[in-house]
Amino acid sequence: MQLPKVANVTDVGCRDGFQMEKEFIPTEEKINIVNRLSKLGFKRIQITSFVNPKAVPQMKDAAEVVSKINREPGVTYSALTPNLKGANNAIDANVDELDVFMSVSESHNKANVRMQVSDSVNAISDIIALAKEHNKPVWVNLATSFGCPFEGEVSSKNVLNLADKFVSLGASGVVLADTTGMANPVQVYELVSECMKNVSADKICLHFHNTRNMGMANILAGLQAGVNNFEAALGGLGGCPFAPGASGNVSTEDVVHMLEEMGIDTGIDINGLLETARYLEKIIGRPLPGQVMKAGQRCDLHPMPGS
Image 1 (cartoon, rainbow, N blue to C red):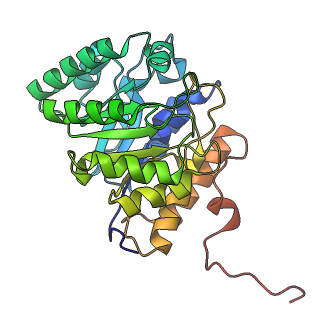
Image 2 (image 1 turned 180 degrees about the vertical axis):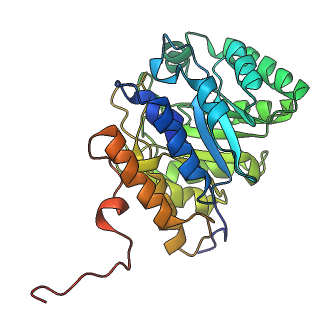
Image 3 (image 1 turned 45 degrees about the horizontal axis):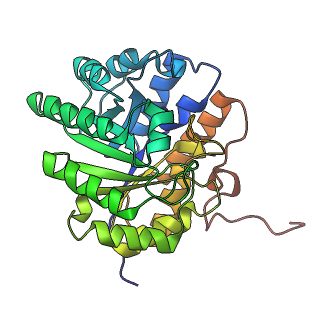
């Protein structure tokens, strides 16, 4: 089996994970988690979202988080920006990179950002143009790339057309997002393979949820297709607040553990990552879905019964 020798894992827990929490997480704890992650070998961390705080109150401290984290050399700190106003606010706060998003399906896009797909395309095009003026890279997240909870199957042609368009406009890349965990490994392999005909592998990132327990298998399918960029959330926290039944993201520490056990270098300190996941669990105040922080790493040894 031919697989990449290196993989890039971006943690999005401080945005995609935290946004689902009803109880406000203290700003100092958000900063603490980012600072912990920054020392573990990540090349990219999505740390917040410049969304309307009335829509997502958890993100009302976005500018403060960005201004108070300890920035480590070699780490890119990104933030989600849902519209031009959010993009301007993120640029003013001096984030390193902008993440913008839209849904491929009309119904989910309407539920999520209250816009038609065509309007979102125009809005994102404006954000890419703005980002160029400020020398800020932009990644475009294409939600519901593998299925929509309202419409069912999503046209792969629409996904591919959008990916091609945004890369041609100057986006650094596109994130094919399985927003509610509808993807299966064969579907992932086929869609990624088609996408790579026009978009290079380094400009494709995959974002999976484990709603139906296929997240890790889907990552393997993405690797087999030739992609080595993935997003995951610490502890498996998160989901989608506008998608019925969407459970958490694939767990960052589980993904890193799997990749390293497969001989794929992530450059991430798995022991420190597990420690940070357990710390996050204390902050959230309930058990989180991550498995390796409970079971331990594959070759962690245990005493014989009765010894």
